Length: 161
Image (tube, rainbow, N blue to C red; front, side, top):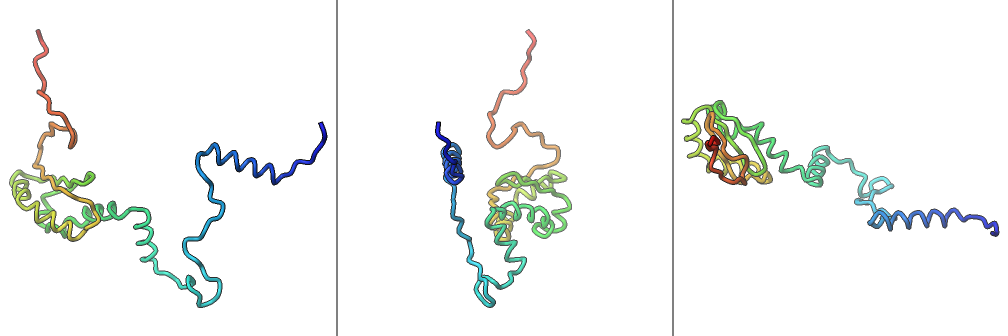
């Protein structure tokens, strides 16, 4: 077997080829910067940016807008519904549903009548929240179902005999 020098570039090219074949994806060799940056003074891309614009761009790029608007709803619940109503209610958000727990059945029935106005106010203040429905629950209401999609069953039966 003749001694031949191993070309390191050929070995690297072969290794990269194996990585592409077995990883199942193509590697991008030439990364293009998203925004051209200038290197000379007064060139485009050299101006400082405000923190607010950077944070808002990050929020939209990563898709955090619905989650942040939902948390803002919870924190500003008193401003949305008023001090009196907020003192007797506690909101909870699960997916596109807001569940409002009330202190008494009187407050619950009153909020059931007001839920369309509350939903309109929430959608006007937070259009990107994705909230579609409000559910009002009174105190100590037992839940027979365990979620929005459940099968109704006959309940416990006599197992003796």
